[in-house]
Length: 458
Ligand SMILES: Cc1cc2nc3c(=O)[nH]c(=O)nc-3n(C[C@H](O)[C@H](O)[C@H](O)COP(=O)(O)OP(=O)(O)OC[C@H]3O[C@@H](n4cnc5c(N)ncnc54)[C@H](O)[C@@H]3O)c2cc1C
Ligand SMILES: NC(=O)c1ccc[n+]([C@@H]2O[C@H](COP(=O)([O-])OP(=O)(O)OC[C@H]3O[C@@H](n4cnc5c(N)ncnc54)[C@H](O)[C@@H]3O)[C@@H](O)[C@H]2O)c1
Image (cartoon, rainbow, N blue to C red; front, side):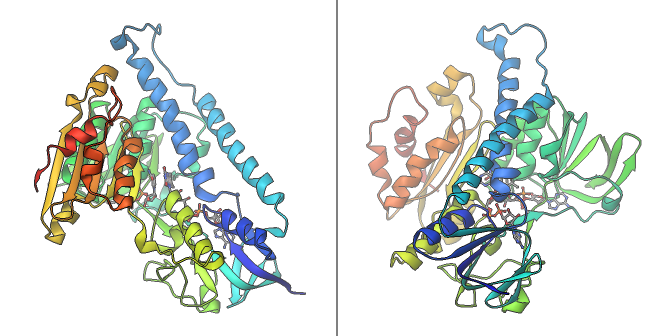
């Protein structure tokens, strides 16, 4: 027998649960299908657990520096990995529990556990049963990929998922991929006490960022003892008595790196290969991302795709914003669009990188006249007081419209401070609004007006 719904939501990532509840509250009969854990990547093996681990790692780092501040902690600082993981598990579990009880308590929402697969444009099969939906929303996220190295199948490779259950501290963690996931884990495990080597195929870290951001991030992590091999070619991996050995080249030099553990952080692929999309006639691009329009509709009129799976964002806040866009347009007569969203994200190393809008390279590519302001953190009083003067703040402004085009704040609280610039961008206001605002002393934010007062042609 077929179960009929007004709406089916597949996947409980960072859009699906909110959408399912909102649709149910609007009076629809809704099914939310989840094959694994409620909350998806962010809650279970992404943002929440990694930022919880980053917090433990920072405490270890600050404790090691305690004497610099005149504070005695007594003896060597060491990390109890099982206690670190237990703290992380408690915080993740709180999120899962509160999400689960919220979903279970929503009238009109039917929770279905299992893997969903389309069997037609209006039907999906789960655990042998068929569900039909007048409207269907896909929020299935993605999963990590592995480097295509010879020998990769012969060694146990960690991913962001299996890292969450590590019981012991790796003696030497080899991180493959020097981007967001790789760098957060690299610094974290170095601070926990592991040796860490990052192997990156590009000739610089986080190559989407401006070159001076890549260089400063490398310097910050090298200062803490993380080692890097960049521009790596001809890599291969093999098992070794107590771990793995990676052989690779940089230029003419051949390297052998022996590690106890290896972590793949070389990107993610969408969970669309096992979704039966062809049965529903849903189109994907060559990498498997579902093609959507500016309001997140697929080519099939009653089917939408939200979150990482549509390739229009790869963050929790972009997935949640997808939910807001769909609800506004479907239930509130709105006209919200993905293209109205300003790019914004953080890289949660310490100090963090807060990024909004365009990079310098992107601004230059537009050819428009622009202004730039850069301030090293060594000039910021608050950073000096805290003994954390690494990094810099950089802002780009359109010379004619005076609008802020982008910013890279690689500095203490950079992930928070960047929102003052983001909100002025969202308001479509001139940079002079924030330049003339009076900010609190002594903060990092108080130097943003100063920075904007020192703009020079790009
Ligand atoms: C290590 C790591 C750290 C991150 N840190 C940050 C961060 O600090 N800030 C940030 O903004 N973003 C971060 N991200 C990215 C962020 O986690 C994702 O962008 C976010 O979770 C949005 O995902 P989503 O909504 O697309 O789906 P997901 O969260 O991936 O959830 C998809 C859900 O769908 C389920 N599913 C898949 N296929 C099916 C199916 N066929 N049937 C039923 N259920 C299915 C899955 O089990 C999963 O629960 C991080 C990611 C990783 C990996
Ligand atoms: N702070 C955050 O918001 C945050 C944190 C972690 C992850 N994420 C999300 O997760 C997504 C995936 O992150 P990611 O860091 O895994 O992927 P990514 O695509 O950002 O970076 C992958 C890196 O691996 C390198 N690489 C690829 N193949 C390689 C190989 N064979 N050998 C060595 N290096 C190789 C690439 O050059 C690149 O630097 C990101 O798009 C991001 O949106 C966000």
